[in-house]
Length: 303
Image 1 (cartoon, rainbow, N blue to C red):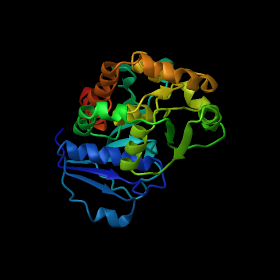
Image 2: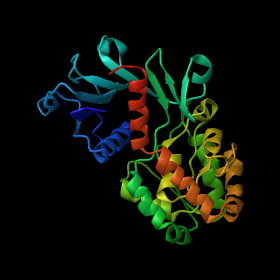
Image 3: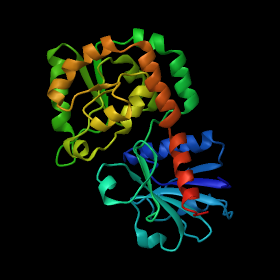
Image 4: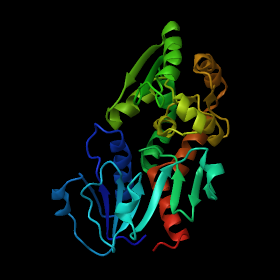
């Protein structure tokens, strides 16, 4: 699309998990040759913007306090206050979950990617933070990655309790790893480079969702990341299992998930792994997500 400037607004601090979403969008827009800025949510950031007429802002509702508001700008919004952007050119992006299928009249773009034309909403899972060319480099080195894997498990991401948490689902898998002499490591807020290193190293690294996410069909970005980094996809998510044509290791009960991993690895061919990673490269990068959003803007006649 014809934007002179793309501004990713807010969440420049790694202390918030949405940092990684904006980080990935920033990398993808630059890869697509857009003039792109990623700015903190502050008054001083406004001075860094060249106020041309074709500016696209992408932001999230916890970090849009000082975002410039103009009728000539276009806004991609995630969980933002509707009244703040009333009568402006906007489209909303929301994370896919199964309840939307019964709640709204939707237009399908691809599996688990939908538009609500009337509400101007794009529903999608997040994706891998790797770019297509970076995934190709991993594909080219895939045999070495598979052959160098060790009997270790790395869970990368937040671990927490409560209604929306995942600790009750992660703990049984962790305990099974430990009882089978598989070292289990858990990290959060680590660099992409470290993330990739650990997932390539660990044979038993899982993609586990909490009960609330599992019941609503939430698709975690960890699934796309692990596959694109050269890891196995080991999950309790039915939707991830369906999305990848049942070619991944799936068990809804995480106390039984570990027991399925070795057989899955034994039964999965190298070509099967290449099919999975190529699927992510073609359909589940943030380049793909931007194209999905832009298609929605065109489809809804917003520009």
